[in-house]
Image (cartoon, rainbow over all chains, first blue to last red; front, side, top):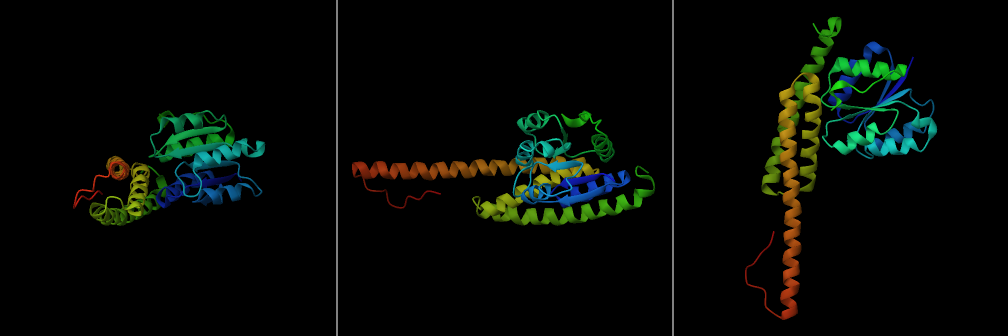
Length: 131
Length: 116
């Protein structure tokens, strides 16, 4: 069973992600703080994929991504970055990382499930609504 | 039904979202009253921006795009409060620079002058 770490501090979105991903039969772990997410990623087993919000308490999603790039094992983990923000430079930074995809909030539940499924199979492509 | 036999579970999630988003809106109303009285109240402004940001991201995801759109407008308005705060700080610095200039040329402060 695949392990997915969801780093999301908005309880409404976290609950919706749990619902959306339930059919994929994952082991889903949710953390709502950036520093706690880094502490978890230092432990084993590392997750097979991440869903990462950008706006987080502690450390931002982008800071976590940059930190992950310094460790080859963590840098190889596929990441779906979610954001309600509109900063183009954030999207561009995410897309500059080979293992990352970007999805804008609000998101479509079915599309998100498809993208995460593809991400875990190593077949993900950028979602159409990501612009 | 979009989620088939999971429709009831989704409906329960949506009902929870609507109820708790109502609590968030009530908190936002209180925070905006606080900000109206004190536009520089940093904690109130940060909390209001967080609530607006979260509703912006969640509303449409639960099927309510108008909630996301309104929350985005609110978030933008709160960012303007940030600009006001920065302007107020610049104005304070301007006043302090002027006070130093007056001191340098020994011109007394005008009576009753107050800066934000």
